[in-house]
Amino acid sequence: MRGLEAPVIAARLEEITGDEWNHANAFRDLVSDYLDVTPPSSGLFDFAPSDARTVRKILEDNLRREHEGVDLYKQILAEIRGQLRHSPSVLPFGLEVLEHELRHIIIDEQEHIVELTRLL
Picture 1 (cartoon, rainbow, N blue to C red):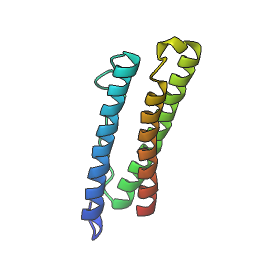
Picture 2: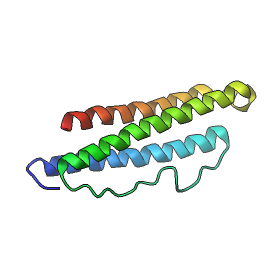
Picture 3: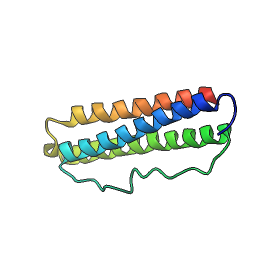
Picture 4: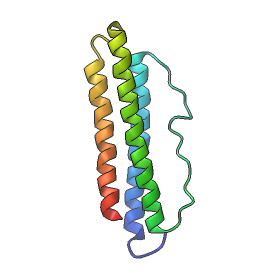
């Protein structure tokens, strides 16, 4: 990435990348703790490298990925809610905590979308 704004944008993108790793790890912990499932160590949250080189393309690529992340987390939350409607005894006392934590991740992702949109 080149340009006067590149160092500042690169630093912020590194912070956002750290957030993404934190989200992925938190999600794995939530699934393991509340649903007693061992999520795969790879696959769902593999971060593929981008071939974008301009500031604009890098921001656009990151923005697209943030949208995909929000969609994925919302889909997962909907599936969990659906499963629990059919089997409420699976998670009788943890649903609200699980929902709260997933919604917090979604909100962080949405904040990234707003920030990246502003940077564009």
